[in-house]
Amino acid sequence: MEQRAFQDQFEWENHCWGCGGCNEHGLQIKSYWSGDEAICTWQPKRYHAGPPGALNGGIIATIIDCHCAWTAMAAAYRAEGREIGTEPRLWFVSGSLQVTYLRPTPMTEPVVLRARVNEQGEKKTIVICSLFAEGEECARGQVVAVRVPESRYESR
Amino acid sequence: MEQRAFQDQFEWENHCWGCGGCNEHGLQIKSYWSGDEAICTWQPKRYHAGPPGALNGGIIATIIDCHCAWTAMAAAYRAEGREIGTEPRLWFVSGSLQVTYLRPTPMTEPVVLRARVNEQGEKKTIVICSLFAEGEECARGQVVAVRVPESRYESR
Image 1 (tube, each protein chain N blue to C red):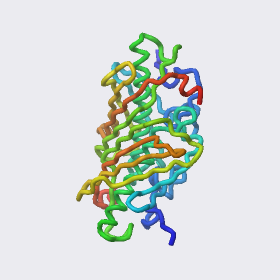
Image 2 (cartoon, rainbow over the protein chains, first blue to last red; image 1 turned 45 degrees about the horizontal axis):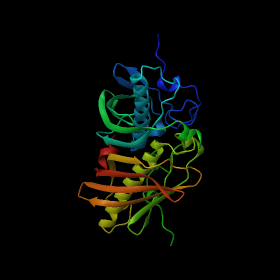
Image 3 (cartoon, rainbow over the protein chains, first blue to last red; image 1 turned 30 degrees about the horizontal axis):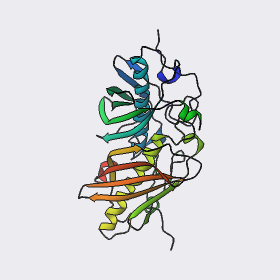
Image 4 (cartoon, chains in turn cyan, purple; image 1 turned 90 degrees about the vertical axis):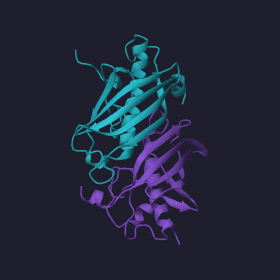
């Protein structure tokens, strides 16, 4: 059976610029389990460049941020033995983000993010992530994802 | 005399997604000195959201990243007593980026970035930055900007 992306298992309109399927201007990343790793494969567009020929550092930060936050969410559901998106909904936001740029990231092929949970607490989940392009690790990141009550955003 | 943005003082086509005036899809941020601080005021579009009503964390990371890299460049020119963009060109890229998200960033008004150089070495410049929205500090960042020879990108 084909796996559905984490992002497609929530029954709500996600307009997030990084991962929202409803955001036609956004990056629309998709994240999937592969064992204990969460994988995201994403093709940059030409206009996502930073320095000539290399992927923009902010775009790299964005896809690492969203992919890691989703990995934290998926891991929280997994820890409770529940399907992603089931009620009560588990919801995380990024408390902090750290990215190290190891080398320029080429843009001709899709980039691949490989994330894994490094630490899973009651409120905080630390996710680490590497970005690969053309088989080389080009950036490395860490996100501290913080669990928040769903009501915090519904009331806005 | 009105100050020109750092980004407008280089005579080349900048297609960077974060700060390139030539990138019609990009964020096109502009950075200016105000004493020892570099200021960037930028109006998000509705589709730059993350969680409902709040600015996307990746967009926050992107504008901090570009603004801090430009601050490092402008500070390098200033340290040499030269106008930004004059030859030989001083060129920096981000070596690492760290962002702490303090609270959701509202999107109705322009956000304001205030950056300053924390440490200026021969090869590395550390720039710290705060993002304000509606008068409140919503995120805080740090970029380690690394000086690179211009030839590194011209040869790509």
